[in-house]
Image 1 (tube, rainbow, N blue to C red):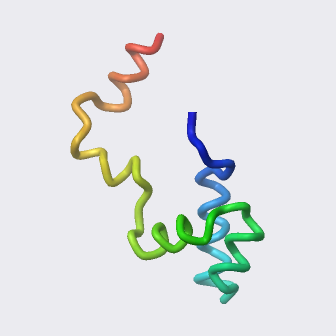
Image 2 (cartoon, rainbow, N blue to C red):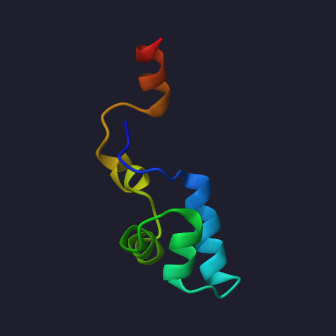
Length: 69
């Protein structure tokens, strides 16, 4: 279970506020319930941890879902 309270939709909204609405990183982080450092990391990295680790995965998402059934 993730140790954070935000989801990808919150992250996308927070990034949108920073990029398009010119809200400060700290204000956007507070508004969307995301740690400022996490938001900063995502803003500068451009991808989520899951997306960054995809090339290292041995099973595809489809294969994982089949196993979980």
